[in-house]
Length: 284
Image (cartoon, rainbow, N blue to C red; front, side, top):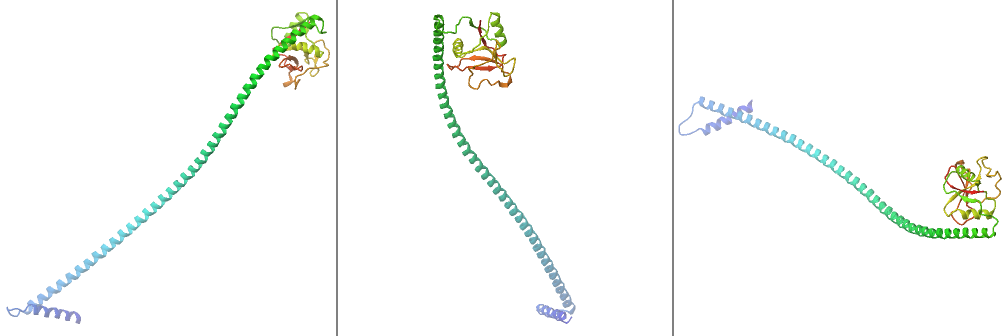
């Protein structure tokens, strides 16, 4: 209270001194009114200062909030950038792996291409060799046909001169290919039967009657007793002239025997199903 009164007195004195002029002294009531005006003015200043401080605090609060919002946004943006960078790195790694796999596959395909080219070259060379072998076999085939024809002519001449015990008289070959049973019927209808071959000399003679690369039935089968080959006159087979690996009774139904001339070899018998179509060598 004392401090406040002292302050007011100081203001009053200052006011009194400042109001001294040549007009003369003022009244007491005027001086009191003037002090109240000064006191009111000071209160308004304090209010304005408080309001200003409040505004400053509010501005600081707004600034802090905005700063926090900015920092949060920047942090989120940085995290987003980090995630994007990680995704890019993963994509780059994946692309690098794919590139490595593709390069490996490319090298493998190149190696396969080289292997295929080598294989094609080898097959081409093998084809050329097979073609040469085929041409050579064709020439040999012609030579064998010529030899068979020559041998047949010589045999016929020897038989006509009596120099061969196996006469060609009564031997003939059917012109049409038929089953073994039909071929035998063909022979029997003409007073004979399928030929019986019981000597090497007769085997050579029968081979000469069949042209090269042709086949013909002979009178040998195991139709009546499986595994027991007999001739059409029911005599037992004593000497056979079988091709290599024959008879094999393939699939269990090869019961009849043919003579086949693929070369000049003497062993050219083969067993096969009786229903196959072949010419027949007949003998009266």
